[in-house]
Image (cartoon, rainbow, N blue to C red; front, side, top):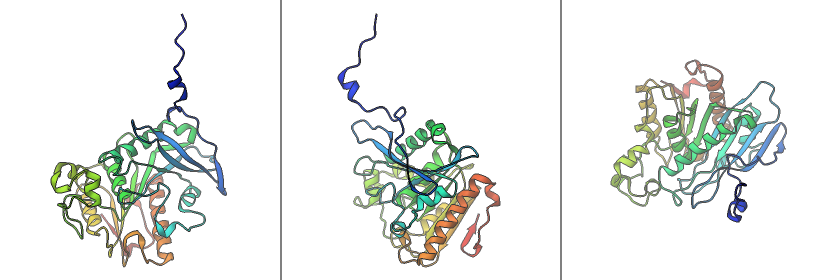
Length: 312
């Protein structure tokens, strides 16, 4: 007896991301392969979730560590391959630079707040890390050595991923000017306001859903044994108060988690109006931190400019 032939509906559906062949790679920058628009997840009733990959072209030493980048945009907008306005004109771009330093880079879509409320976006990032682990042999990457990197809303989600994900647990986090507390008034943020980006993320004003707001607050998810953090925040940020990173650094220190807080003097949100050389320094030192995380003990991390770095 032969098995029934698949239906037309089954035949026309695209292969599941877990089994779909990888797209061909382009080499737009010397020594770096790019794979764009790779599906990693399927959400029932929603669009396919995709990621972009930058991979070192040749690797003789085995699987490479991974940087998982999470974009910003108030949880409401943004592009997965955008690290912010100060780096859009870089040639080579920031992701090619990270790949040239020996990392694979994955920039993942996640559902925005108009598509799903919390924890939808965080669930998507978990799914991306699961897919990257599943396909790691093909990609020649080591997701046991994943550093999550995020800016603004992406930094908030990257913080939560680093603090709560365990299979595999990220090796560390680099977080730029991100919210860490969705429960307390800070700067222009009011938990009672139902129109803030935070309220749209949660589906209600944070004050009206305190348990959900706490679950979405990295400062409330800190635990002993969490991976190391580098928190970088401008001390003149007009969109996300620097106290968010100060509070998260203090909570990590109390839990005896290695954490470094770098307050950028004169820095506004998105490194707005900072000199190009200073933006380059932030990027370079963040990459240096990530490299140390995957090659040495985090307690032996060193930096070239300790005057601006507070160690816990």
